[in-house]
Amino acid sequence: MEKITFNLTQLHRHGTAFFEYLALRKQFFVDQLGWDIPHDDAVEMDQYDNPQAYYSLVLQDGKVIGGGRAMATTARWGAHTYMLRDAVEGKIIGIPDTIVDQIMVTANVWECTRVVVSSDIKDPAVSGQCLSLIVEGLAEQARDQGATEMMALSRPSLLRALRKIGYAPRMIGEPYINADDGRRYVAMSMDVTGKIAPKPSKRTETVSAYEQPLYAQSPL
Image 1 (cartoon, rainbow, N blue to C red):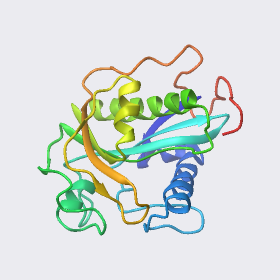
Image 2 (image 1 turned 90 degrees about the vertical axis):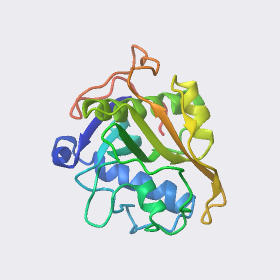
Image 3 (image 1 turned 120 degrees about the vertical axis):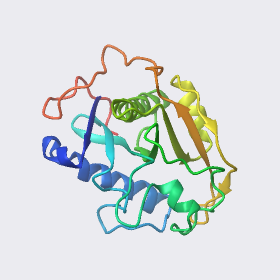
Image 4 (image 1 turned 120 degrees about the horizontal axis):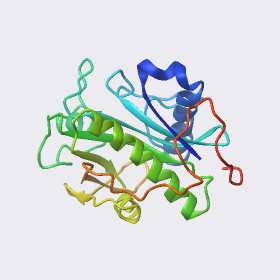
């Protein structure tokens, strides 16, 4: 299992990894959850996949099995800022404008979106390891840009999963029911100033996108 991090200026270093991540998002958010978001037959891609975004992907046996996206709350691309702020300002259909109590616009706070771990992973330990690497990569990039906190909109189960891998997330808004999939979602935030997630095992480390992963589990 390996972790790669990059922004859009660095896509050429990682082959097809970014496209595979967009395809994984389409399989999960569109095909499985039924979200009404921009996509075609192969990938899901929205207005926040822009030069302000940073990515953390996890590969196993050369295949993307998970990933996430993050950007500063100071980000702006055309008419859009970041997802939670755009929701509060009424620019996103389906997310209530009461989703957070306060709009953050500071380089100290980043927003994390589109976190996905392949649903083909059946082993909770492997899923947790993948999530840990995704969050680690996003947190590292955020800290490199001066961030101290990351927030996200996700299912409440993510709070429990993050606590299991060493983080301390907290809710920063009231849950709501997503009309597309009927599930509860809530805004959350957590400190990223320290490397507080458990270190990967000796068999898991960050390597170049051109190197082979250290090992492969059963197909995911």
